[in-house]
Image (cartoon, rainbow, N blue to C red):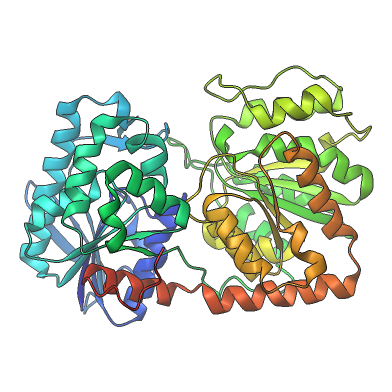
Length: 489
C-alpha cells in the first residue's frame, strides 16, 4: 500500500519525532511504500530511508540512494518559519511557538505545506494518509487532499496541551482538519476527553486508542552495555546550533561516574518544568538515605536544566528557597514539600549526573542497566512511551498517576505481583515527593525474588501489548476508516 505521512518536524529527539521514525520503519518492514513529509535535515541517518525529495530548485526533485525506493522523505520549503508547541531552538529556522506567530505567518506555513503535499500526491498517488498533531498537519491534508485520499489524525498531546486548549484562535484550523479525518488516534482516554471537549463530542465515534509502540527487538531485558555506549559516545563529535545539539563528553563523564554495585535510577525526557524533574530531585535525598548505592542519571535537554542543577546544590545546602519553572510559574507539588517536609540529611550532588541528550537508539544500551525509571510529569501526557520502553528492558517505571502515564501503569499493574503494584505510580499533590521517594526506595529494597517476578511480568506484558508493527496496522486502519476492530477510548 502507498502511504503518505505528514509530520512537519524532525525524525530524531522528542516523542513525536521518534514516533514517526519508528512508524516509518514499521511501515517499510510491513512491505508498504512510504512517502513522509517532515523537516529532517539528515534523512539518510535512518537506514530505512531510500530516497529524499526537496524543493530547493523551486520544483520537487527526488534523489534515491537505492532502488526500489520503498521510503522517500520529503523536506518542504517552509520559508524558514517553523511553528512549535514548546519554545525551542532549531538550526536554520525561525522557530517560534504557535502563539507567537501572526495569523498571516500561520496561514503561510499551511499554504506552503499544502503545495508540497499536492506535489507528492501527484507523484506518488498514495492510497491512505496520516497527519500528525492537531495543528497544523490535519488542516494541511484536508486542503491538499480535498477528499481524494482518506486520512487519519494522530493526536500527540502537546498540540492540545500547549496550543489548542489554551489558545482558542487555533481551534478552527484543528476542527477543519479533524472534521474530514476518517479516524483520530489518541494515546489515552484522558487525551480523547480533552480532544472532545475542545472540538466536539461527536468526534468520539471516530476516536480510537493509538498509543506509540516499543521496538521490543531492541529494547529488551539484557544487562545493558554501558561500556559500549561510552565507547560509542567517545567517538561521536559534538554538535551545535540547535536544542538537539549535544556534547557527548558530558554523557561520557556521567557514565564514568557509575560504579559497580550502583543502583541506577534514570530520567529520560525534556528538561522543562512540566516534566517534574524537580520532584525527582527533591525525592532523591530520601532514596539515597535508605539506599546509599542509589545513583540518578538525568538524560535530556531543555531550558530548565540550569535551574535543576542549581536545585541540586540548594538541596544539599538545606535551602528551602522557592524554585519556579523556567517561565516563572509556581511548582505547587514541589512547594508543598519544601514548605512542610523535613529534608533528609543526605548529600546528593555526587550521586546525580546530567548526561545531556542521548539518541533514541542509545537508550537501548542504557535502560537495561537501570533498575528504575522515574516519569514524574506534572502535566497530561498522551502516552508514556519512555515508561513502556523501560518496562520492556525490565526497569520498573514509576510514573505520575494521570493521563497516558496512568494508563501505562494500570496496564502493568494488572500483570505484576500484588506486592509490587504500589511502586508503579504516585499521585500528584502535596505528597508527590514523599510518595515518589517511597516507591523508588520500596522497589530498591524489595526481595530479589519479588523483583525478578516483577521484571518478568513487565517485560512480558510490554511485548504483548505494545509493538510498532501493531501501531502501523492501526494507522492504516484508522486512515481508511476501518474502526470496528480498533480499541475504543
